[in-house]
Image (cartoon, rainbow, N blue to C red; front, side, top):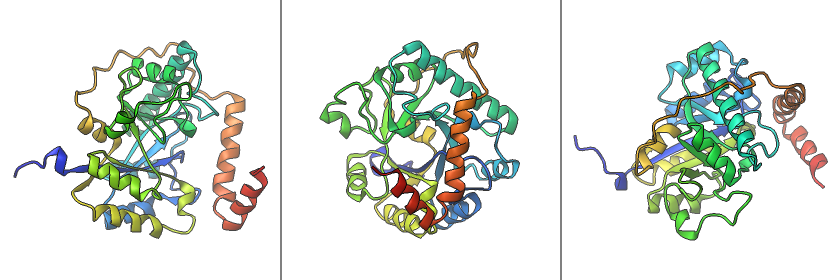
Length: 290
Protein backbone atom coordinates (compact mmCIF):
# COMPACT_ATOMS: atom_id res chain seq x y z
CA UNK A 1 0.00 0.00 0.00
CA UNK A 2 1.31 3.43 -0.92
CA UNK A 3 2.29 5.56 2.07
CA UNK A 4 0.29 8.81 2.31
CA UNK A 5 2.34 11.89 1.50
CA UNK A 6 3.03 14.52 4.13
CA UNK A 7 0.85 16.96 2.21
CA UNK A 8 -2.17 14.65 2.59
CA UNK A 9 -1.62 13.69 6.21
CA UNK A 10 -1.85 15.80 9.36
CA UNK A 11 -0.33 14.55 12.60
CA UNK A 12 -2.11 15.41 15.84
CA UNK A 13 -1.58 15.12 19.58
CA UNK A 14 -3.40 16.17 22.76
CA UNK A 15 -0.97 17.50 25.40
CA UNK A 16 -1.98 17.65 29.07
CA UNK A 17 0.35 19.64 31.31
CA UNK A 18 1.53 18.82 34.84
CA UNK A 19 -0.27 15.73 36.20
CA UNK A 20 1.41 13.04 38.24
CA UNK A 21 1.22 9.49 36.90
CA UNK A 22 -1.37 8.20 39.34
CA UNK A 23 -4.77 6.64 38.59
CA UNK A 24 -6.41 10.01 39.14
CA UNK A 25 -4.96 13.49 39.29
CA UNK A 26 -7.36 16.34 39.93
CA UNK A 27 -10.16 16.03 37.38
CA UNK A 28 -8.21 13.63 35.17
CA UNK A 29 -8.82 9.88 35.35
CA UNK A 30 -6.32 8.06 33.14
CA UNK A 31 -8.47 4.96 32.58
CA UNK A 32 -11.50 7.03 31.62
CA UNK A 33 -9.37 9.13 29.27
CA UNK A 34 -7.99 5.94 27.71
CA UNK A 35 -11.53 4.69 27.12
CA UNK A 36 -12.33 7.97 25.35
CA UNK A 37 -9.15 7.76 23.25
CA UNK A 38 -10.10 4.31 22.04
CA UNK A 39 -13.68 5.33 21.34
CA UNK A 40 -12.83 8.57 19.53
CA UNK A 41 -9.38 7.77 18.11
CA UNK A 42 -6.81 10.17 19.55
CA UNK A 43 -3.48 10.19 21.41
CA UNK A 44 -2.44 11.95 24.62
CA UNK A 45 1.01 13.15 25.67
CA UNK A 46 1.49 13.97 29.34
CA UNK A 47 3.87 16.89 29.93
CA UNK A 48 5.50 15.35 33.00
CA UNK A 49 7.30 17.44 35.63
CA UNK A 50 10.72 15.74 36.07
CA UNK A 51 10.82 16.63 39.77
CA UNK A 52 8.09 14.00 40.26
CA UNK A 53 10.33 11.19 39.02
CA UNK A 54 9.99 9.14 42.25
CA UNK A 55 6.23 9.53 42.64
CA UNK A 56 4.63 7.52 39.83
CA UNK A 57 2.09 4.82 40.67
CA UNK A 58 2.87 1.32 39.30
CA UNK A 59 -0.72 0.83 38.12
CA UNK A 60 -0.60 3.97 36.01
CA UNK A 61 2.84 3.06 34.67
CA UNK A 62 1.42 -0.28 33.55
CA UNK A 63 -1.54 1.47 31.93
CA UNK A 64 0.85 3.65 29.91
CA UNK A 65 3.16 0.75 29.03
CA UNK A 66 0.26 -1.42 27.86
CA UNK A 67 -1.16 1.43 25.76
CA UNK A 68 1.89 3.00 24.14
CA UNK A 69 -0.23 3.60 21.05
CA UNK A 70 -2.37 6.03 23.11
CA UNK A 71 -0.14 7.45 25.85
CA UNK A 72 3.34 8.95 26.10
CA UNK A 73 5.19 11.39 28.35
CA UNK A 74 7.63 14.22 27.70
CA UNK A 75 9.66 16.75 29.71
CA UNK A 76 7.78 19.65 31.30
CA UNK A 77 10.38 22.02 32.66
CA UNK A 78 12.41 20.73 35.58
CA UNK A 79 10.85 21.85 38.88
CA UNK A 80 7.98 23.77 37.23
CA UNK A 81 8.78 26.97 39.11
CA UNK A 82 7.86 30.47 37.94
CA UNK A 83 9.81 31.70 34.92
CA UNK A 84 11.98 28.60 35.17
CA UNK A 85 13.26 28.79 31.59
CA UNK A 86 12.87 32.55 31.23
CA UNK A 87 16.33 33.48 32.49
CA UNK A 88 19.48 34.48 30.62
CA UNK A 89 22.23 32.57 32.43
CA UNK A 90 23.29 30.00 29.86
CA UNK A 91 25.19 27.76 32.29
CA UNK A 92 22.31 27.74 34.79
CA UNK A 93 19.83 26.87 32.04
CA UNK A 94 22.08 24.06 30.84
CA UNK A 95 22.25 22.66 34.39
CA UNK A 96 18.47 22.94 34.66
CA UNK A 97 17.95 21.21 31.30
CA UNK A 98 20.43 18.51 32.21
CA UNK A 99 18.85 17.95 35.64
CA UNK A 100 15.47 17.50 33.96
CA UNK A 101 16.91 14.82 31.68
CA UNK A 102 18.71 13.12 34.58
CA UNK A 103 15.40 12.90 36.44
CA UNK A 104 13.59 11.55 33.38
CA UNK A 105 16.32 8.93 32.94
CA UNK A 106 15.97 7.97 36.61
CA UNK A 107 12.19 7.75 36.18
CA UNK A 108 12.76 5.48 33.21
CA UNK A 109 15.09 3.26 35.28
CA UNK A 110 12.62 3.10 38.15
CA UNK A 111 9.52 2.40 36.05
CA UNK A 112 10.71 1.09 32.69
CA UNK A 113 8.60 3.76 30.97
CA UNK A 114 10.31 5.60 28.10
CA UNK A 115 9.83 9.30 27.45
CA UNK A 116 9.96 11.67 24.49
CA UNK A 117 13.07 13.83 24.51
CA UNK A 118 11.12 17.03 23.83
CA UNK A 119 10.36 19.86 26.24
CA UNK A 120 7.28 21.90 27.09
CA UNK A 121 8.16 25.12 28.92
CA UNK A 122 6.29 25.82 32.20
CA UNK A 123 3.81 28.71 31.90
CA UNK A 124 4.83 28.97 28.24
CA UNK A 125 7.78 31.22 29.16
CA UNK A 126 11.21 30.78 27.61
CA UNK A 127 14.17 32.93 26.62
CA UNK A 128 16.25 32.64 23.48
CA UNK A 129 19.12 31.57 25.77
CA UNK A 130 16.98 28.68 27.04
CA UNK A 131 16.50 27.52 23.45
CA UNK A 132 20.27 27.36 23.04
CA UNK A 133 20.59 25.47 26.33
CA UNK A 134 18.00 22.79 25.53
CA UNK A 135 19.53 22.35 22.10
CA UNK A 136 23.02 21.92 23.52
CA UNK A 137 21.89 19.42 26.16
CA UNK A 138 20.33 17.06 23.65
CA UNK A 139 16.61 17.78 23.34
CA UNK A 140 14.98 17.08 19.98
CA UNK A 141 12.42 19.91 19.92
CA UNK A 142 10.31 22.24 22.05
CA UNK A 143 6.50 22.54 22.09
CA UNK A 144 4.93 25.67 23.50
CA UNK A 145 1.79 27.81 23.62
CA UNK A 146 3.70 30.73 22.11
CA UNK A 147 6.71 30.92 19.80
CA UNK A 148 7.80 34.30 21.10
CA UNK A 149 10.73 34.34 23.52
CA UNK A 150 10.39 36.74 26.43
CA UNK A 151 13.57 38.57 25.41
CA UNK A 152 12.69 39.30 21.78
CA UNK A 153 10.11 40.50 19.29
CA UNK A 154 9.37 36.98 18.15
CA UNK A 155 9.94 35.23 14.84
CA UNK A 156 9.01 37.03 11.61
CA UNK A 157 5.58 36.39 10.10
CA UNK A 158 6.75 33.70 7.67
CA UNK A 159 7.96 31.57 10.58
CA UNK A 160 4.35 31.23 11.77
CA UNK A 161 3.55 29.46 8.50
CA UNK A 162 6.02 26.63 9.07
CA UNK A 163 5.26 23.42 10.99
CA UNK A 164 7.99 24.50 13.42
CA UNK A 165 10.13 27.62 13.61
CA UNK A 166 13.91 27.38 13.90
CA UNK A 167 14.23 31.09 14.54
CA UNK A 168 16.04 30.55 17.83
CA UNK A 169 19.48 28.99 17.33
CA UNK A 170 18.19 26.69 14.58
CA UNK A 171 16.28 24.63 17.16
CA UNK A 172 12.71 23.50 16.30
CA UNK A 173 9.84 25.05 18.24
CA UNK A 174 6.26 23.88 17.59
CA UNK A 175 3.16 25.92 18.45
CA UNK A 176 0.25 24.32 20.32
CA UNK A 177 -3.26 25.71 20.87
CA UNK A 178 -6.25 25.36 23.16
CA UNK A 179 -9.31 23.59 21.79
CA UNK A 180 -11.21 26.89 21.63
CA UNK A 181 -9.10 28.04 18.65
CA UNK A 182 -10.93 26.26 15.82
CA UNK A 183 -9.89 28.81 13.20
CA UNK A 184 -6.27 28.35 14.22
CA UNK A 185 -6.49 24.59 13.80
CA UNK A 186 -8.14 24.94 10.39
CA UNK A 187 -5.28 27.22 9.36
CA UNK A 188 -2.80 24.64 10.67
CA UNK A 189 -4.34 21.88 8.58
CA UNK A 190 -4.47 24.06 5.46
CA UNK A 191 -0.81 25.07 5.86
CA UNK A 192 0.44 21.54 6.56
CA UNK A 193 1.17 22.09 10.25
CA UNK A 194 0.46 19.55 13.02
CA UNK A 195 -2.62 19.70 15.25
CA UNK A 196 -1.27 20.23 18.78
CA UNK A 197 -3.97 20.64 21.42
CA UNK A 198 -3.06 21.74 24.95
CA UNK A 199 -5.12 21.54 28.11
CA UNK A 200 -4.91 20.83 31.84
CA UNK A 201 -6.65 18.37 34.14
CA UNK A 202 -9.26 20.99 35.12
CA UNK A 203 -10.69 20.80 31.59
CA UNK A 204 -12.30 17.48 32.60
CA UNK A 205 -14.10 18.76 35.70
CA UNK A 206 -17.45 18.20 33.99
CA UNK A 207 -16.46 15.12 32.03
CA UNK A 208 -14.86 14.44 28.66
CA UNK A 209 -17.69 15.26 26.26
CA UNK A 210 -16.46 18.75 25.33
CA UNK A 211 -13.08 17.25 24.43
CA UNK A 212 -14.40 14.30 22.48
CA UNK A 213 -16.76 16.53 20.51
CA UNK A 214 -13.78 18.64 19.51
CA UNK A 215 -11.71 15.54 18.69
CA UNK A 216 -14.52 14.25 16.48
CA UNK A 217 -14.55 17.61 14.68
CA UNK A 218 -10.77 17.44 14.17
CA UNK A 219 -11.02 13.90 12.83
CA UNK A 220 -13.68 15.03 10.35
CA UNK A 221 -11.28 17.52 8.75
CA UNK A 222 -9.28 15.04 6.68
CA UNK A 223 -6.48 12.49 7.00
CA UNK A 224 -5.58 12.97 10.67
CA UNK A 225 -3.08 10.66 12.38
CA UNK A 226 -2.71 10.86 16.16
CA UNK A 227 0.70 10.15 17.62
CA UNK A 228 3.35 11.20 20.13
CA UNK A 229 5.31 14.45 20.13
CA UNK A 230 8.55 12.69 19.24
CA UNK A 231 6.84 11.26 16.16
CA UNK A 232 5.44 14.70 15.32
CA UNK A 233 8.93 16.22 15.50
CA UNK A 234 10.41 13.40 13.44
CA UNK A 235 7.71 13.70 10.78
CA UNK A 236 7.68 17.46 10.27
CA UNK A 237 11.34 18.39 10.57
CA UNK A 238 13.02 18.70 7.20
CA UNK A 239 16.23 17.18 8.56
CA UNK A 240 16.58 14.38 11.12
CA UNK A 241 17.46 15.44 14.63
CA UNK A 242 21.16 15.74 15.35
CA UNK A 243 22.85 12.88 17.15
CA UNK A 244 22.30 13.21 20.88
CA UNK A 245 25.42 14.53 22.63
CA UNK A 246 26.80 12.58 25.59
CA UNK A 247 24.96 13.56 28.76
CA UNK A 248 26.95 14.96 31.65
CA UNK A 249 24.88 14.78 34.81
CA UNK A 250 27.71 15.87 37.13
CA UNK A 251 25.87 19.03 38.21
CA UNK A 252 22.41 17.49 38.23
CA UNK A 253 20.58 17.84 41.55
CA UNK A 254 17.90 15.16 41.54
CA UNK A 255 15.95 15.84 44.77
CA UNK A 256 13.83 19.00 44.92
CA UNK A 257 14.84 21.54 47.56
CA UNK A 258 12.32 22.36 50.32
CA UNK A 259 10.75 25.56 48.85
CA UNK A 260 10.19 23.87 45.47
CA UNK A 261 8.75 20.74 47.13
CA UNK A 262 6.40 22.90 49.20
CA UNK A 263 5.22 24.75 46.09
CA UNK A 264 4.48 21.46 44.34
CA UNK A 265 2.59 20.22 47.42
CA UNK A 266 0.38 23.32 47.44
CA UNK A 267 -0.26 23.10 43.69
CA UNK A 268 -1.26 19.47 43.99
CA UNK A 269 -3.54 20.19 46.94
CA UNK A 270 -5.27 22.82 44.81
CA UNK A 271 -5.55 20.47 41.83
CA UNK A 272 -6.83 17.48 43.79
CA UNK A 273 -9.28 19.22 46.09
CA UNK A 274 -10.22 22.72 44.98
CA UNK A 275 -10.15 22.22 41.21
CA UNK A 276 -12.44 19.18 41.34
CA UNK A 277 -15.33 21.34 42.51
CA UNK A 278 -16.90 23.98 40.27
CA UNK A 279 -17.87 26.03 43.33
CA UNK A 280 -14.49 25.86 45.05
CA UNK A 281 -12.62 26.51 41.80
CA UNK A 282 -14.76 29.60 41.14
CA UNK A 283 -14.16 30.91 44.66
CA UNK A 284 -10.42 30.21 44.36
CA UNK A 285 -10.16 32.09 41.07
CA UNK A 286 -12.10 35.03 42.52
CA UNK A 287 -9.70 35.24 45.46
CA UNK A 288 -6.70 35.16 43.11
CA UNK A 289 -8.02 37.85 40.78
CA UNK A 290 -7.00 41.50 41.44
